[in-house]
Image (cartoon, rainbow, N blue to C red; front, side, top):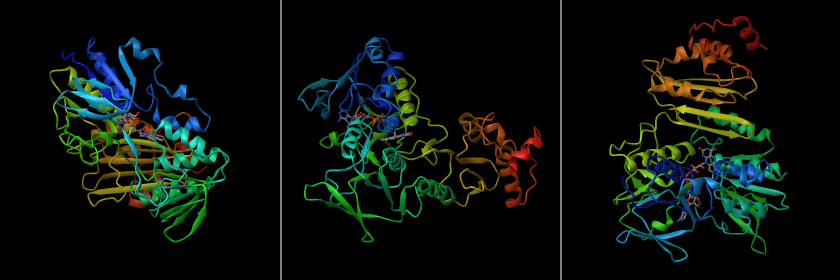
Length: 451
Ligand SMILES: Cc1cc2nc3c(=O)[nH]c(=O)nc-3n(C[C@H](O)[C@H](O)[C@H](O)COP(=O)(O)OP(=O)(O)OC[C@H]3O[C@@H](n4cnc5c(N)ncnc54)[C@H](O)[C@@H]3O)c2cc1C
């Protein structure tokens, strides 16, 4: 068993999962986790709820503070600025040299910007870290109007956060529809309507040109590419995130592209140095229809688990991410996606999309055009069981069979509305098929379908 020190830079979900699992498999090895952002691991996905007053920072920590000492996982608050690979040391901004046996880079992401004029003015910021949240708290005191730039998941969270404080929001989205580089057009339009219904001034196909300053160096307005000036006291830049690997810029032996390049065992180009989580970029995508950089919570956890196993076992296993899954909330509207549902449906797939009359609940299936096996599913406003679709896609169940028994996949069969009959009837009509409605409770289902 390797008992030289494991040093992990980054105490996010990837780094912390790795530390916990190394300890699970190896009771003795020294483990040190370093982060400049916070002393303890917290849930980044819950940042918005702190601002909205639903949670305190303390509540976002998945483990009590005593957990780390009890498990002999040493924590250090420091920013790492360099690595000496010869001496196997990392260097902190305070000038400290920290020795490592095995180094795990788990430094996450940072907000992406494109250098807009005025992006460094007071009141202009992204949202990623605890420090960003503190800055947002200060920047939004007593303001009336905010502009958010970039139609992704962090942008819509920011809109909800600002609105919870009664700050008017203009939301500039470059694309024709919200998040339509990910969502097919119909789903994106459901979200467009939902955002507008929440009182957000959503501007589609609208681009930021520059951010304008007042006489004190704070934002006073933005100008769009179309020349419109929109007065505001806060600008949220949320066009995406990029791996946070600035500290490796003087380190040419660790190969980087956007992120730190890794193979399927999370090995970098340097022995004993690994990278996981948002900052890792796979040399080869880890599965078909998967991306080389995975910037979501659950994949960070899987990276951490896999690497910890490999570092402590003699039979290393390649990373196998399984079926793609993601979920999000657009204000109060839940979205889930499983498997392969690209925004533009390619010729090898067939698709069926259903939406309720109010345009607030939607479901899309993609399936193999030739043999009819399920490939993916999107749901909006209707939560499905993760395990069900994971298995259905993995095992290649027939789409029509799934559709006939869709109520079995319903997450909350007892209390939530079941739209299975409407979906089947719509499918039969659209595709000229004659699938029967689920037999159990047929009359009740039909009554619900037309209620
Ligand atoms: C507001 C927001 C909401 C999100 N919501 C969701 C969601 O609902 N679902 C979902 O799947 N994903 C969500 N994400 C994405 C998800 O949080 C990330 O994919 C995940 O946190 C990445 O984990 P990580 O461990 O790779 O890195 P991180 O969580 O970024 O942790 C890396 C840590 O390393 C530290 N660090 C970086 N560089 C250095 C250095 N040089 N020295 C010392 N420390 C350093 C960082 O400060 C940070 O603390 C959200 C992200 C944000 C910002």
